[in-house]
Length: 68
View 1: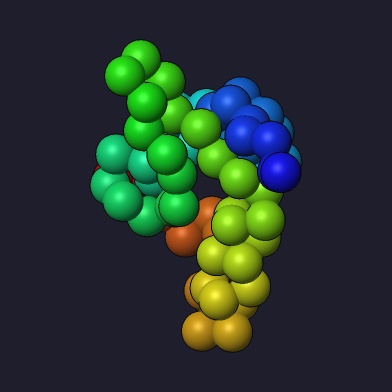
View 2: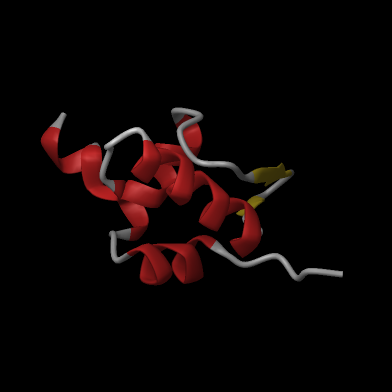
């Protein structure tokens, strides 16, 4: 069974800030699991999400909380 990772881990993995990772989860942009007091991710699902975005010609850093 695949382990879940935290926001800090996914932010580092994607090369974005934790604030951007939270923004993407609250906006429904990135696949995630919302727990009562936490958000978790599966790396395999995030990898698939990135591949789909790449096929569409979108970059991972298309939208950050800093440029809104």
